[in-house]
Image 1 (tube, one colour):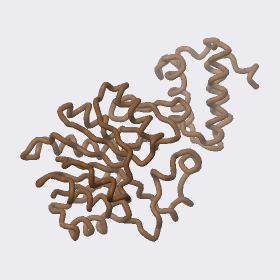
Image 2 (cartoon, one colour; image 1 turned 45 degrees about the vertical axis):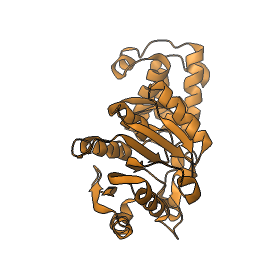
Image 3 (cartoon, helix red, strand yellow; image 1 turned 120 degrees about the vertical axis):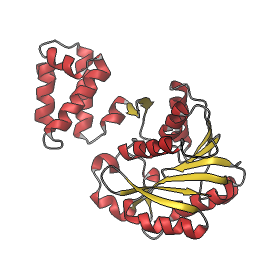
Image 4 (cartoon, helix red, strand yellow; image 1 turned 135 degrees about the vertical axis):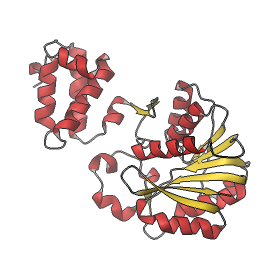
Length: 290
């Protein structure tokens, strides 16, 4: 099969024929565009103008490797090792989650709210930074923020540090587990605390795609069915201890627990607890104040 693959057109034909049992036609062409951009710097229109162009053996080899990985359900972002988040370029590997559009919406909400606060935000803590996408985007768009970003995974922190360096963002990264209160006592006070903690129930695994289950880090995704509020509860306690008076807490949440999390934060003593829906109309974000 590899000997038959010489031109851009033949690559597209191979991808369409070999991946149509896993992906729809639109998804397949998105993979094609991403790979040609990543490997050759060709944009969408340029791919169609170069259909008869003969590719180098090295390029064909890399395209075939990507094709085989896609057949094994590996996400395209892990194949290329890069993605974009609010126009910020990030490196990725399987130690960190692939940033979702919903998380972009969370950052956009925070960026919009910064104009409404009485006292300007100076310090911020992110809990569970992963690739660093939230912390880096907020530092990029609000340069005056002094940001501390925490994660339980040393491997994830390595990725986040690299991404901060690539994007010229000075952020303090530290290892820490929100479920270990003794570690959290050493933290300072912050104007802003943000988190996209694990919130997918273990029982929801059956509904998830293999490209997520087989490749993305489960520690960053799942909470036990017996305690779906595990991380929200711990983060609320942290916010009460480490937010300045009037400081803000932002969470991305499981859409099935919006009202319960809202009630939890209110019972804990946070005020002005508001629930926001994402672009698909699902309860997805919570904002609260100390």
